Every structure is written in structure tokens, then in C-alpha cells.
Image 1 (cartoon, helix red, strand yellow):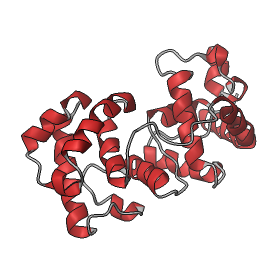
Image 2 (cartoon, rainbow, N blue to C red):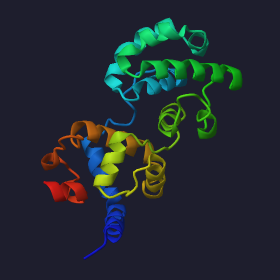
Image 3 (cartoon, rainbow, N blue to C red):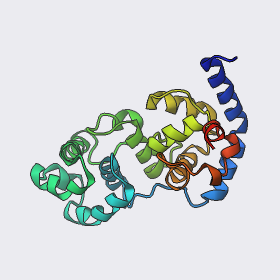
Length: 224
């Protein structure tokens, strides 16, 4: 009988061998999943929208950002915003106090340290309040065309299910996937996994019987 570590290693080896097939199947199912579903006009709007989307949904965020970006037209407006007013403006997204504080702080840092422009590299993005690797990777992939792995709840769950990683720490999951996913498909893969997590591999009740990658999914094979 294999130990848990040996079994996980075998699962990952098999997943690596099948990754091109997995990507092809996801591509056939989600041919239009090449961008995130947040609505934005520039890198700064994307940054704010991504901060707002934490513990919320892109769909909900998209309902408030048109009015928000009409009221606050750029980092200058957000940097000088009244905290309580901004909190009220974004309250429906949840965790609004922290989000408002971080958006104001990030806006000020962009103005003070980056000449009013959103940084185009991970190191500088991570200096902004409220910005972790996930948010930074969304901005880098969407606004600057860089190939990135975006580790959200869907990526964390599904990469475990199909054996691409045995880690639970998002940074380690990202590192594992960077070793496996072809360099020119990373951002696309991230968006397809997100779409798959919303449509099929739902957290509470995954629809394994209709999953096109079931034959490559350790979790699905065990639980179908």
C-alpha cells in the first residue's frame, strides 16, 4: 500500500503527463475564457476592481464599478476620498472598511512612488496596500500581457482535484503550477480553471458526471 506522500507524487506525475490533454479539453469547453470577467478601462480600474472582488464576485463588483469610476476618475480622486464615503460606496462588496482603506492607500502609493501609474512588475505591485500575489497576477496578466498563474479559490480547489499540487499555501501552489503549465498558456489556463470552477467544479456540489476532465481527476474518480 502506497503512503500518502507516494500516492500524491504519483498523482502529480500523471497530471503532468496529461496536462496538454487537460488544457485542450478545457479550451474546447471555454474557448472565450481568455480574460477575467471584471469590467475595466485601464490598469488602475482593474486594480481597484480586483481589490473589491476579494470575498465577493466579479458579477457583483461589475454592478458598482461603472458608478464608482464615474465618481472617482483615477488615483487622484481615490487618494483624496473621504474614507467613510468610500466605504458606503463599496459596502455591497463586503469587507468594505478594509477595502476602502486599501484602495485609498494604494492610490496614494501609486501617486507618491510610481508617478501615478500602476506598476508593471510583481515586486512593486506587492508594495501597494491590499495587493497580494493573486491581485498582482491579475493585473500583470490582464493589463500588461504577462503570463501568470492566478491562484484563487477555484484554482486552489481544482489543481488539488486533478493532482497538479499537494500544497495548500497559495504561493506554493503557484510555484508548483509554474513548473507544469506551458509558459504561453498560463494566463489562459488560469481563466479556464476559474470558468470551470464556476460552471462545473463547484465547491459544494461538483458536477463530476458532466466534467470533461473527469478521467484525469483524482477527486472525481473517487467521488463519482
